[in-house]
Image (cartoon, rainbow, N blue to C red; front, side):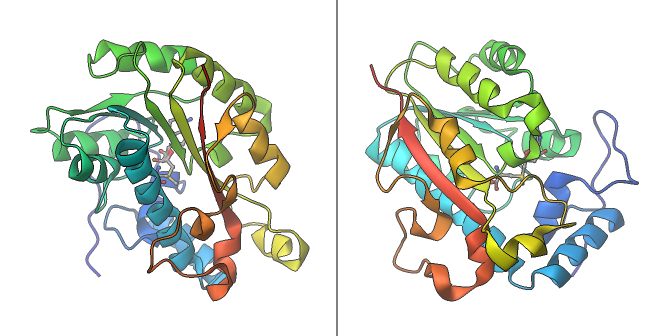
Length: 267
Ligand SMILES: C[S@@+](CC[C@H](N)C(=O)[O-])C[C@H]1O[C@@H](n2cnc3c(N)ncnc32)[C@H](O)[C@@H]1O
């Protein structure tokens, strides 16, 4: 496969360390990664040969959740924090296939993600890209609102897909989510996809994979404190409102490593 060495257009990029967004892109079969990212991705593949289907399904549940947020919950604006490198069927593509008027705000702290997303979205007036760090939620919301695409007086869909497991306990991700949720108006929805510790011998395999913190299900459930869970609750990603072609959970052990849930902020 041909690889693109990502262009260096913004911020500082450390080429000696693997980067979350680029390793994920590599595992998804994308083209934007450096040798150090590919080495980290290969290490993960060696330890868990089914990782490809695992990451594809982590991405697929994001598409189903986006369809739900726009098509069923009827939300007209989405805030996607930890957007990742643009790939096919991004959140704005899925949202606009349901309702072309939906406003999408993407936030990430990775300079390469930001430059790629900005290039891709240069002509898209309903989607904006904002540099921000989830560990500083107040500043992130201030910056996002400056772009005039996000209105915190109207319910919105907050998407935290594949990002919270990169925030260590020491940074108190529960307080961060609590702060974001407090700023949302009632009727807003929150979607979270998170790596989960599957327990048993599979937990051993996780050691050294370096893809973030595999939290216990109860720890992940705590992110939804004060919110009303939408059916089917917090479940493995392939069990969250599956499409007819979604594989069943027993298809590959790699599917046991991530859960997803969506909840509504009550009045
Ligand atoms: C595994 S990717 C997930 C991408 C996409 N949401 C998905 O689920 O396909 C995680 C993304 O979170 C971003 N990220 C990690 N820590 C972050 C932080 N503290 N603030 C903002 N973005 C962060 C990374 O740059 C990366 O793009």
